[in-house]
Amino acid sequence: QVQLVESGGGLVQAGGSLKLSCAASGRSVSSLAMGWFRQAPGKEREFVAALTWTDSGTSYAKSVKGRFTISRDNAKNMVYLQMNSLNPEDTAVYFCAAGSRRVAGAIQYDVWGQGTQVTVSS
Image (cartoon, rainbow, N blue to C red; front, side, top):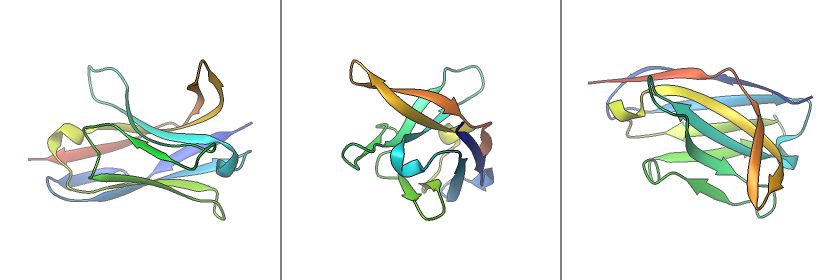
């Protein structure tokens, strides 16, 4: 079974950068749709960025487009999220997720990591 473990979160000042990592086991990330989501206190979990296997494309939430970059390293079986120009609104627990199928064209993310905290000050 696929397992995901996030790392790289921490405390950073506004305008700074962080790079999150997602280590996968059980399946190759090249054979899965991979995504990043986040959840702030008292708010719903929201989509951040995604990689797909069908077209090798990327997708980003409007709030992070141009600032965040999702990528994968197939040799290491890892997925990354480079976050630049961070602001306090980016403060949240960030989750790595994997999807193996689609329903009505929508990726079903059914495997999730434990999350890593990102806190942006000032």
